[in-house]
Image (cartoon, rainbow, N blue to C red; front, side, top):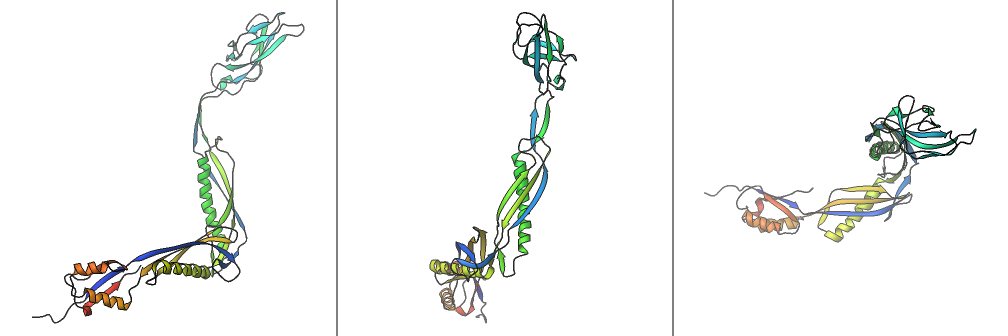
Length: 343
């Protein structure tokens, strides 16, 4: 017995898609749009500031330091005397001081004593070596020799401390800039009309100041960022039309008349000069199958196996992929239906 009806097979075709891109410099002016110009205007310059305090991350270890200073030696003898480098002198509090160089002291010429000053340091590191003036005072080191010290300083224990790093400043500055950019765009958007689009990213100049420089000892650093931006707006539809027209010309030249625009044109802009911007457009163009070609394809695959039908269709211009809703041999022309998936 022959079947009373024949089921319809749906053939799903995904047409070939091609990406078309364009990029050019656009002048923003007050006249009607032309090949390189669209209507627009310059918004008043805006300056905004933000500040932030962040903890520093620099880690420094400093070894213990010995105090340094000067000792003045006086010679009461009528002949010159030398106190050799490395001579040990003890302060009233017991701190030991060692001279760094030979002290050559001239003879006394009464009532004036011979004298000379040399550098010296505490033998042990630490703040105990920080002596006040006169902590060493009196006879020492030889016959008719006396010594008096000046202030000794710089003695300190080993310690760890924090410093500012360039990374601290850069990280905080980047965070401030991101926040400022959002605030500046929001402020400029209040001046943008419904038929206009603000060009982003904005053209901005930043000035950063800090209360500490890299390498300075501190547990925190306060960073201030001032940003001055120029806002440019253009007529949205004018640029949309200009870029769409340019893309259409390119598509016709590169792809021919069988491809049509699929979906929206994606436009990006970047401020370039005071009244110029870099505009780019991206679009997807998909191959189209007119009704006459669809009928030809149906007739060509009717009553054929799916293997042969698929091979035939994939060899045709504009077919990217193909699938069938049923298995086995395809039915006659009247029971084949095409479905096209565009994206």
